[in-house]
Image 1 (cartoon, helix red, strand yellow):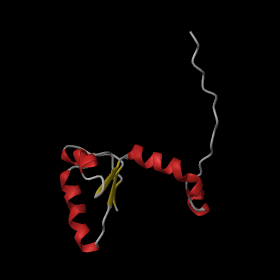
Image 2 (cartoon, helix red, strand yellow):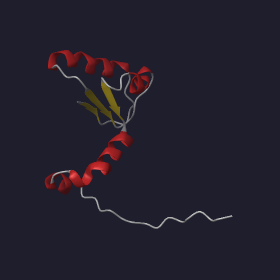
Image 3 (cartoon, helix red, strand yellow):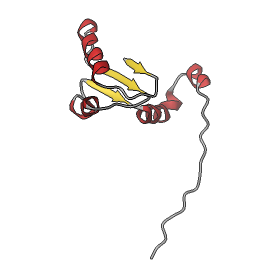
Image 4 (cartoon, helix red, strand yellow):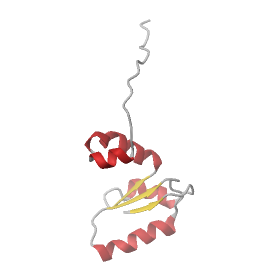
Length: 95
């Protein structure tokens, strides 16, 4: 796993750095998280190398957190205190 928390989008140099570390660790799948997203050829990797490298931007991270929040250990939930709020959505009018 490699993570970039800055607001700048990540490009090829950072992605190549992650690839280089894979051989040393015998990792089958790598995860690269970038809060600022990805640019250029790195963005193309998202689809092309899906089974080798997973690229998560801020939206992917938030979706994964919300989808799995209730399964996280209590101490992690305490660090990220979220509360579910239900709202009523307007229905479609029949016409």
